[in-house]
Image (cartoon, rainbow, N blue to C red):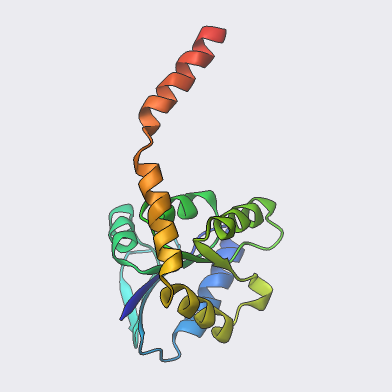
Length: 175
């Protein structure tokens, strides 16, 4: 069975809306999927609740998140820089649900689509049928996973620490 990881993030109101909507969608039985949903409530404990094939956490720590990123077949999430970058670093395809009226998230989502690693569902159009059809298209085609792995391979060749040092040195020499 495919593992779908849904780490919810963003401002409190948007985070809670999406977490509740995804929980509603995911709790209908889907035998082909095992689902982990993180509601992104940082003040909460990391205990889980089980709803059929769905495991729901209020909060997932960084170590557990990285383990889930490695293990999952697909992410369903917002389109913030952080989670998109993490997913692509691990070579994982995405279903992105940008926060309404967040231009940055629309841009991130569109770029991920152009890279061939994601599909986008607008929050106002999010429902069970659209979400699982997008998941099936991604998981039943090797194109998304292959493109996501290619992006991961490219990022693995980058030396972020060295680049940061070079930029800092350049800035320091200008002052």
